[in-house]
Image (spheres, rainbow, N blue to C red):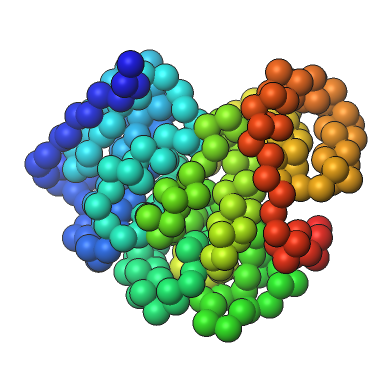
Length: 290
């Protein structure tokens, strides 16, 4: 059975939540969301490009003006973004969460950069968090990544990113499979980064692009998140890395939460069937970053 039902909501939003004029026709913003309609409506006001919202099986159907809404029958996690990218008809797709948005000018600039850098598949923007506009630690780490800037690159080379702050070439993203649905959420970016690099594409940190992230103060279940992240690190290593790296990921998972390691066991068959080591050049870059 097809898990999606497509609902389009045309027409202008009320004046109090009117969206600005799109700044580029080359980018579609894809937003994955679940059970946070109020936060989504707040960030929708800031998107400066066509928007596709993928509703990850929310308890109540969304009604969002000014966006195409794709409702899923169940929660696909990060892979919901794949469905939004498939629906997009622009050469580039910018991802956002329901609590994030791209700063003015960033989407148009991203399109210009990707047109100018044909070997770059993904741009990772700088992320500013909360009303205090503090720099996200992951952005700080990417700014000092040891891989340098390759010839023709759009910025420092990276092998990781935050999904809510990435712009991708739509066709390239889909060609490598997008986000793996088996990982669901948390740490899903690492596998995609490896697959893009293995296919010969560049990934660049571009701090002149900015994303604002306003997570809810209460956050979500921290322990459950750490367990899921540990599980996904093990699975990602099993799918693409040497045995020694897999062993280290398992050892770290045992320290973080032994149940994370146990949760990998039912996934071994598909993970081993899908195992495909990254090229040695990518493995060397991963070791340099580590």
